[in-house]
Image: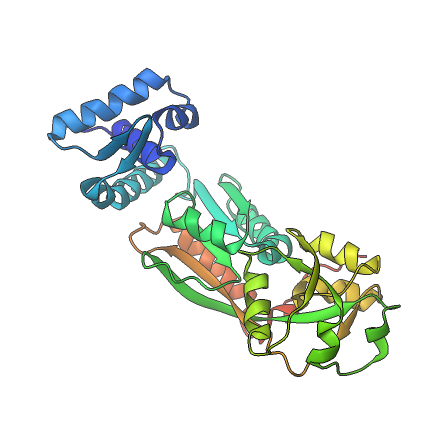
Length: 308
């Protein structure tokens, strides 16, 4: 066998970063060492794997074909290394989660996973749906837990649990005591919404698309907690997951607004690359996720520690 695992590791890093210098920094190598590794891999195989445009390298057709196999081989090699070192084979796991899932479910799940496997090294990346999909597609993370749609042709999508958004306001807001609120009244309010690219915003926009009305979007924020604080301060109304609002509703610091004209239901999903080798850590983590929601109808019914 003419190639080495180190050469494949450099190849994967360069493919993901589209830059030898960034790949070298990620792997703690000198730029010349990383460049030599790629050059040797291509020379030994008599194949070109990248198209070069200045300092940027992008995979050609052969390189794209090699990437998933190289990632799978490196994952399996890591499992073998862990076993030979007396570990259980649950060495590392990189999970991406969208904001609602990341803040309210993923940390709990990862904590449980690490208690069972204290030797494991787990990384959690919390981003919006579009970013998590991109990371999975480029093999930068092992799997994603998302709250928005994913139609990427290279990504496997599996339903997890149903979720529902809810319109809400501060207790002193005029809508707080109104009971059911129609679209016309909603269109006259100041809104504070998640940013474009988030699963929450996508679900909300899809629900509003069925109604020919425009909204006054006063603020767009990337963080659920910031939206809750802004609504509590009386800056406007908003719409996020019931899961994220459960404790605030219980305390009375925020109140739900009934909107029978809006269908705000959605799904949480698992995603991973179709060609990615599923490690033992991935399989067990997915099993733990499914166990958490077994028998649960909707995400806000999941039993979580109370915030006081």
